[in-house]
Amino acid sequence: MHGEIKRFCAEGDKQANVKQFAAALTLYWRAFDLLPEPKTDWVAGTWVLAAIGDANFLGGDFEAGRDNLTSAMHYPDAIGNPFLHLRLGQCQFELGALERAADELSRAYMGAGAEIFSKDDPKYFEFLKTRLQRPESGQW
Image (tube, rainbow, N blue to C red; front, side, top):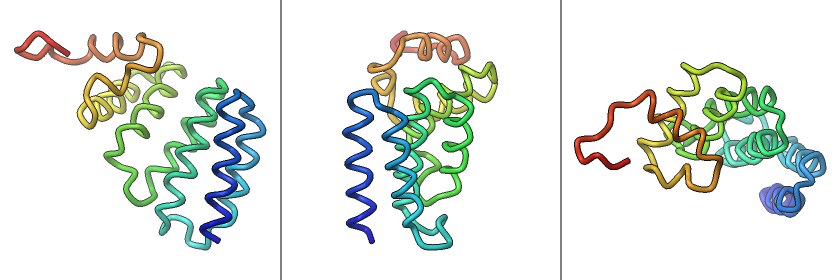
């Protein structure tokens, strides 16, 4: 089963890499459906939901991204995962939930530093800077 989950996720990743997010989501959900109950007991559930939420975000479906990434937070090793907090914060930002966005983006920043923002639109880090006190070093 674990091999099948990994296979579906790898195929989903290939689709996501060429911006075929609907196809990627179909594959990720197939992987998710293979998880035994209770699904929240499985670390694989965390990374499958992370992939789903990432594809939602990259595909512009911020509501689904918020919902799936929020669900992921009930899975092992999710709380404190900088990437999950980043994507959830970005979805919250795009939906106008700025307090929640600031909270999640702060968690991403605390967990991984400024570099976690480097591959995405700078607006997310710029927004976060308006919500945080500048460090004494003057560097973010």
